[in-house]
Structures are given as structure tokens and as C-alpha cells.
Length: 295
Image 1: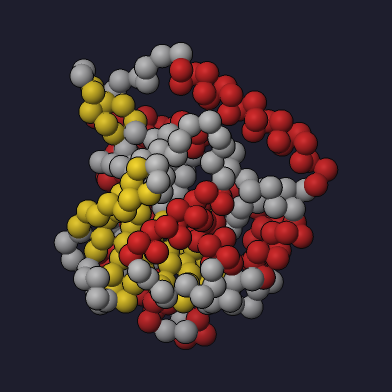
Image 2: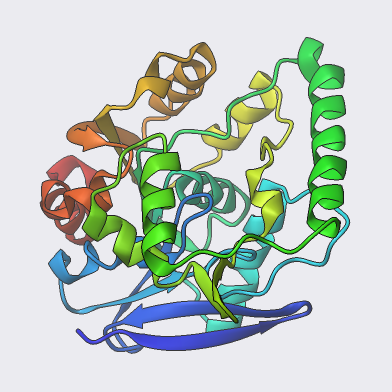
């Protein structure tokens, strides 16, 4: 399968995407993680079954997609609406979905809101968004409001730093909590940089560094998860320190309470799909073809 580039118009610009396969085949939408881009699936999709049309989108502010207009915090709802714009443009009615990290969170929220669209969902090391307890609401809201203003002031105060391509790869490898192999970093960097005189700058919207919690209380979050009606395969990486976070444990417990969700633990870190795609490809292939009970 040779990938092709497409562009979907939206009111603030465009959403870029990479496609694999033929548009007459069964449809699969792929959503990447925070501060990543659709290149995150470049190693996985060649290992997945032919006969599917894989559309991997750069969510707004990532990769080659336009940034949202300035002045507001980007929420999970913003991303869910962006997905709806994409599938409406493609004129898709039913499709399967694969999401990594926050991409899985976006996909699960979208699936709750638009269950008529999603036939099945694969979540790769993803379980949130993490519920927010009501007593923490004011503190959390103050934090994100202040953070937005800090990011805006910093962006307005000067030009973004310039890097060589090799420096950008090194930065990506050293700053990422879950370690990327160099070949994985090289894949992501292809859609992460914009050339400028004297070097490159990162293309991502700086607001992506902010907290992205949707302000769901545990009760609200449980209602969202309970609304997921399609089969869900949750692939959980064995080497992820965040698994011990009490909020993450609560989120994952809620998903386990939904009988449509099957959890499978896989050997690897948060970026197992990029570092070692062969470890999850067969699981996803079986899930794409069969009912959850047949995995």
C-alpha cells in the first residue's frame, strides 16, 4: 500500500491526512497521540491487513494541519468535532477506529457521541480522559487559565527556536517520557518540522503543552464510557509508569465495567505501536476482522 496525502477543508484552514489503501475498501480512521502526528502509524499500517482504507489524520495543531484560531484552550470536544468534520467530508457512515493515547480518548468520546458511526474501536495504551473530582474543579480551572495566558505571552515575546533536523530528532527522543527509538523519532519528525531560514521550527501549536482534561466528573465520565456500544480492544503497554496513577486506575476501571471492552496487555512502552508494531499488529488484524469474542 502506497500512502497518499489528502486535505480536508475546515473553517479555520485544513486538516491534513495520510491515506493507505483504496477508498472503496472498508474504512478505518486512525488518531494519533498528543504532540504527535499521523506519521505515528507509518510502521504499523504496513503490517495491518489489506482490503481496508486507512485514513490517518493530523489533528488540528499537529503535523501539517492548521492550528485552531488563537485565544482559547483546546479541549477534547474540539477534537471530537474535528473528527466529525472529517468523516462528514469523506461521507463516511460506518467505520472502524484506531487511536493511540489521546487519540484513543478522542475516539472513545466520539464513539459515545456518535455511536451510529463507529463499528469498532482499538485504543492503544489509552484510557482517559482522566476524571476530575468536583472538589478539584476550581483549582484545576485556575491552573489551566493561567497556563493558557503564560503560553500566549511566551509565544508573543519572540520567535520559536531553530534546530537542525538532527537536533530536532535528539530533542524528541530526550524530552519524551516514553522512550522512542531513533527510527521512530525520525518517522515522527517528518511531519513535525517547518523549514525556516537557518534551520527548522516545530510545527505544533504550543497550546498542546496544556492540560487537556475535559472537566468530566467521575459520574459524567462513567456515563460517557457506558455509552460506548461497539466492541472495543484496549491494548495496554506493560511498561508505562502512569498505570500506577490513581486517576488513571479509576479511568481504566470504568472502561473495564463496560462489557463491550476487552483489555489485552502487550509488551512494550507507551509507543509500542511505533517502536515495536509487530507486537500488536496481529491483535489488531484479528479485531478488524472478527467479533471481540473471537480474538
